[in-house]
Image 1 (tube, rainbow, N blue to C red):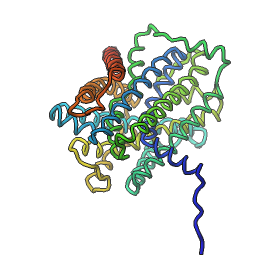
Image 2 (tube, rainbow, N blue to C red):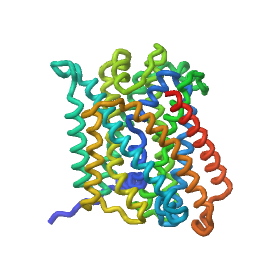
Image 3 (cartoon, helix red, strand yellow):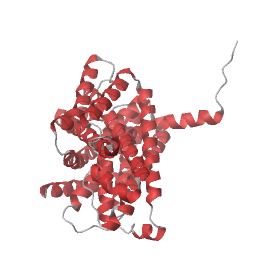
Image 4 (cartoon, rainbow, N blue to C red):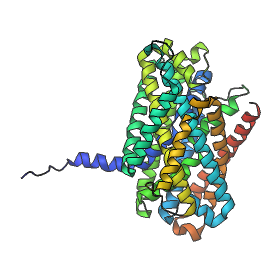
Length: 418
């Protein structure tokens, strides 16, 4: 007769900690995708590290809103869209739902297109024709694998898969940054904040904020807290999870920006899409560094697309006030349709980067609505009881709301110049 050996206490504590930050890791995977990588690299190449302040502010404000949405659900047991529908009526909730579903559709098609184009560009030396791997084949294989994982998986499987992808993404981007890092004096000099005078900088700033401080992740946050079963007694875990999530978002975004700032910015090279990153980066950083960067981009892309597969069933269930059962035939059909969107650009062509930037700006425009609706609920005693917001938290959300309005205005101004 054999007896199982219990895991050591240190391993138990590690597992418990990882389980407690799983919702935050899910948000990182969703938030840091190819659009974020492209936008941060574009900023680093064009302006060095001068726009680091923008990433810092957006991550701080993202932390505030992650905590706010998580606290609402932990206290009330309600998710965001169903609460919006109950307290504001059908139209506001339906507007947020449609806006987020539109963002999901664009994200899946755009992220997949960017990802397969990067792999194709990287793989050119590996093929006899020098044309690289087929984008359509790459998109079909990756979509099929992710859909299979969804079909056979469970919530814990999704969390572990995304945790692995976030770890891969983090290691690749941070290693790349350290491999190409300039001397410390030049690095620190580049951190001096500023707002460049070019006409397209407003669109870039809106895109940078839109990839981090996106309304969809706050709505998803309430769903994840509900799925986790957190209550008022777990508010300390909710805040710690939010802090870890926002901190890692900043580190990964900064790593991409710093890598581009160290290699492309000194030579005056600009990046407008992910393919250019590979083309320009390789002669300066070497094949190994570029390969690491490509692995990071692929991990970022998959970690961003996979949560989008789950988004439509979750949001629809949230809107109806139901619990999402991902194993139903209806939800599997919905996810199958979403997965097929990854084949749109490889099949029919298009400009995925422009679509991604417009989507990010559109997300930045929707974000003030999402913040404002939740801000009112968080201050209602009839909803939050003794846990309604205090003066300091109200000031923090007020500043965040003003910042989101400024970014939305910058996004509209930037779009008008396209």
